[in-house]
Length: 298
Image (cartoon, rainbow, N blue to C red):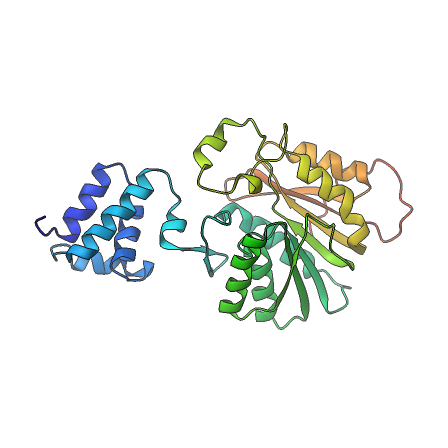
């Protein structure tokens, strides 16, 4: 095979259907260079690739063209400013989930919370939400105990390694939602499976773990279970925040209100879609029935 240049390799990948940015990141990965070195490719567009680099880039490109997530191929994904290692054992963290983290941090800044802040992330996967919260709280000098739960031992292995590499103190528990969890928390946050089992979009997500995506006929099975279980693990006045599908906000708010949560509300993602819903468990256990959604925004 005749040597090819950086520019020729990128052009061939784009002709095969790859996005330009994806092709650049895959070539940098083949060259063992960081994702921040895209300018290097421009400065060396006429440079010839070593045969082993060219072969690796071709293999990476074929995997990407077959639908494998870019993050699995390069082995990492940035989330809330943190570089997380990911592979096929966990979902790729989505930018939409940063909405959940931002809301959680706002709740934890509310006055009257006694340290240490007790925070629980249900369905942690790669550890994205738990680690983002632990990192942000550590950066502001706030004392916190962050716990992360997942039913998958494989996912917890990924999350633990991310915590070790980032030097963040998080407790990990293998549990189906709250079944093996003790204690009570100021905040429970969760990005559970919420895609309906017959949703045609699942066909495009075959490389990611199905058990972390689908949740029954209407996609609400796990959300229902979490909403039912959470009050037993919330301190008085504690909050439950949930990520959900683009069309599920109304139903999730109804479930929260029916369970007895107050200040039930939703938060939009960057696209303006109601991506997260949550509510506050009352300070007292005897509460009026049928509270409406509140406009108060913590």
